[in-house]
Length: 592
Image 1 (cartoon, rainbow, N blue to C red):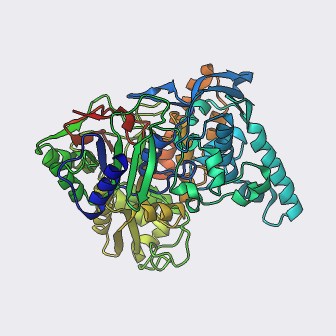
Image 2 (tube, rainbow, N blue to C red; image 1 turned 60 degrees about the vertical axis):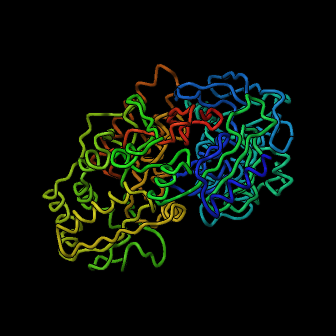
Image 3 (cartoon, one colour; image 1 turned 45 degrees about the vertical axis):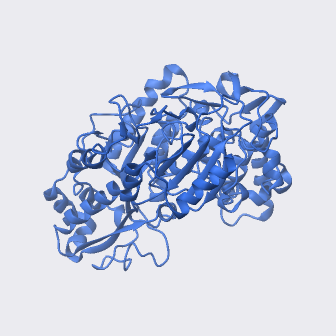
């Protein structure tokens, strides 16, 4: 019966629609497509929102309390050796979706698999930082340490040492006790272990299906591998309350796992769809074809959603997002025959690759962004101002940093200074991209286009939507010259914003080719401040970085709307936890 119902749901989505979702079924239409269901590879909210219900970590977030945690696959833990050793005691009697029992070996395998593969476009970097001291895969680190001309013997010696660090970083004391040995003090290690990349994988099942063997024999074959090519990309065997049934392009079907160690969920079947057109999502909501849909902004909520019968808008002034939105600048655009920079020269038909390396260009763009319009018109005042790329409620945030608002006189002044006056004299052409269906980012791009083009007829900006996967791929390839994008927290510590946004090895700063030795030095020092009595010093450093960023301007933070969730009014158990990508776990839902 269960299998027939799931098939019916999938057929309805792929071939038609149903008037109302079944009582034991949850249908969610989101605005972004899925990138990967491999816990190590996935680094986007759409994918993680599914993974966090299929896989589980040792501890997890406590419902609607982002700062509190509860035992999940572990029952307790302890910290030893001045913070360099973490010991977790594992829950007994847990089974994977395959039926295999979970033991320490699966935890060990899961974390070592992160450290072996270290995909460059994933969250693996912060596990590497903590456990081996390396934020990149072994071959990348070898090149950094030895240079491009190193002999094979030198590389092999480095790789052997790297492997030893992996082996030393995690070990099983017994069948249900796992020990992590850190490369150095890390105040955020416990929080990092709550991220979905640390979800425990069924090692026996994974190895049987062609994943890394878990041994030194083939580990070099997996260094830096794009895990989207592997079996775990679209298959899963976790311990979570739901198991994957099918991933068909833009549709993911899951069902409740009968062998789940915890309380059985009321919702037995789940369908998550990637539907990029907001109008389609809203019509599905109105008809009852979806239980929840993504709505782009408060203006749409107030103008269209609140008038619908049988619909509920969940919001609370206390809800605060664990994220930041900025406009990024690329200091050295990459890619042959790059369509986003035109001619590749400052000749009126393109821009040079280092166009945004001139701070005057960056300031001119910043003064061309109408932040008041974003706050008042798009979000209708339901938003928070951002002075730096860090959530305003998090420690280390400085509310007193100025915000550059729309000032076209200043924008013109800086454009005339840029590139010794050549920008104003010759003009330029470039492309700003956004992910298709995200009307807020589209508005930001079009706002910049309209305001900048109004200053000089020689200024030309094209606005181009990209599919979500293509948008992420282009950003990771460092081929975009300027683009709006958001960042959600991986772990609940301000380091998870300061390092990615402002350090030259940060996952976001690398996409911009942004490098500033002073930022790096301060961020690296802040990471050594792990004692409780050192935290105010650490947070003071972050505030200073925010003030420095105002002058250097690697990016332009802009307002982020206050969170809300839109559902049919018969859906119960909805809450908002800023550290959960889907904002809540499916297992807590029910229908009245």
